[in-house]
Amino acid sequence: MRISVSSDMDEPVARALVAALQGRGHEVRPHGALRSGGDPQWAVCSEAAAREVADGTADQAVVCCWTGTGASIAANKVPGVRAALCTDAYTADGARRWNDANVLALSLRLTSEPLLTEILDAWFAGEPSEDTEDRQNVDRVRILDHGRNRL
Ligand SMILES: O=C[C@H](O)[C@H](O)[C@H](O)COP(=O)(O)O
Image 1 (cartoon, rainbow, N blue to C red):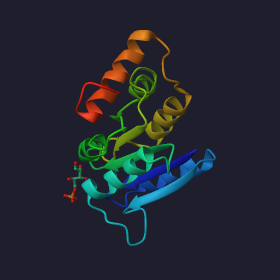
Image 2 (image 1 turned 45 degrees about the vertical axis):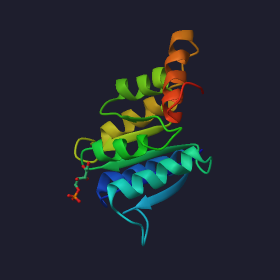
Image 3 (image 1 turned 60 degrees about the vertical axis):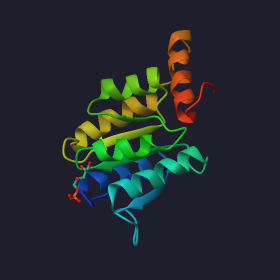
Image 4 (image 1 turned 90 degrees about the vertical axis):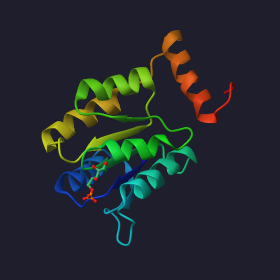
C-alpha cells in the first residue's frame, strides 16, 4: 500500500515506524519532520498526510505527534478520513474492524518499538466488519463529513 506518514518530531519511534512500514513492503510518503524541508507543525503535517488519503494519493496514513491527540484531531478534520488514536493492538484491531479507520494516529511518547510492532500487526490484519450495524455507523460518519443528511 501507499502510506502517508507524518510526525511533528524526528523521534526514534517515528523513524522505526517508517522502516517498519517499508519492511512490510509499503511505499511510504513522509511528511513533517520525516521529510527534508517538511513543515513539522502537527496540524500542518497531519492534515497533509490525511489529505493524501482523502484524495486517493495514499491508501492509508499514520500520523504521529507527542501525545497523538493533535495529529488525530487534525487528520479527522479532513472529509473522508477516519483517524483512530491507538495505544494498543486491541484498539488498532477494533479501529479497522468497527470504525473502518483509514488513518492510524500514534503517540510518540507512549509507543515503544515492541508496542509499535503489535499495533501495526493488528492494524494491517484487521478488515472492516461487514456487519450491518457496523456499516451503518461508518455511513453515519460519512454523512457527518458532508455536514448534511446524505452520503
Ligand atoms: O498534540 C500535540 C502534540 O502532542 C505535540 O507533539 C506537542 O504539542 C509537542 O509539540 P511541541 O514540541 O511543538 O510543543
